Image (cartoon, rainbow, N blue to C red; front, side, top):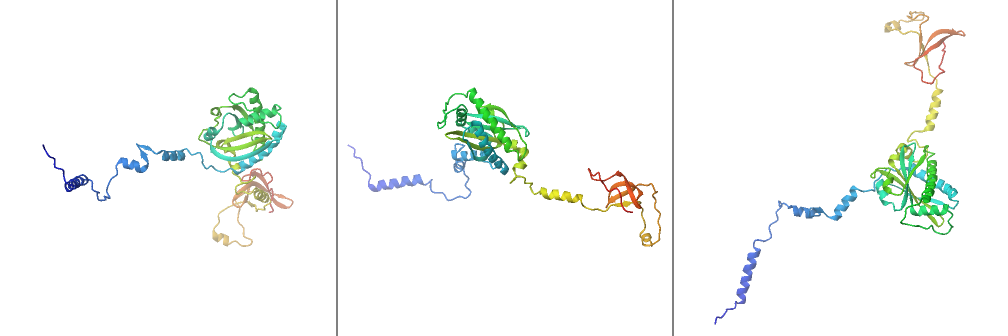
Length: 363
């Protein structure tokens, strides 16, 4: 029989100590090294990248910055006044159009990208494309589903106090499109009247679309002005959106930048008119130059009463009429009622449109 000798506690402790020292000796805490270079994995971890791909949070933030639609465009104060005028005119014209009590209000006027607006329109809806004749560009009017069914119900004799019936999931009928087109023509006529204090403009209806892809009147990234209006007809009503790209408003941009009607950006029309009227009444001296010849200063100093010098011009030589150094007319010397006069034969430097110049001068 063989007998195994059990190790003592001291032997086991010493063996464990040797094993621990052997394993941890190469991995002792290194001294801090200021020149240590990070590897690519550590750099990606610090920058928020995982497997060569950015975190979703950072990626979404960068994407928002690149494709942000909240862009600060210049404010057009006069355009807001035009839309306020449109609301007042529409309230009256829609009452006559529907024979009902109609209230029109404008929710807000904002600037945004045209593509962002098309993506946000709830369908189904109707997109009316119209053209600004004098500006040679296009605008867009969007009528939502609630407004379409409300106007159809009103025009076809629906009873008051009942909400318009909505039938979703089907295309709009010819009758519905025709009635909405009549509404659009009324609104476009009111929009033209709203611009009358600024400029004469005619908005002409072009076509009616139900797909926003076919109503793209501008590049999706271009800026546009959106005016949201709410039409209330007692228990019925809906929304109408008016979209005008900045390119369409460019011909009247300076007028729309005015703070109030008639502002001239530093120019005072009243003062300009007054100045022009006073200039016509200004008195000026006109000299009749018979002859010019160079003379020495000593000869001029030697002139005395009774001295004579010879003119090189003959009696029929032309005489120049000058205002300062500007030659205005040429004429001939004569006599009128015991006074020496000059008859104007040619206009040299007179202002255009002045057909009543001075024709005589005292000798």
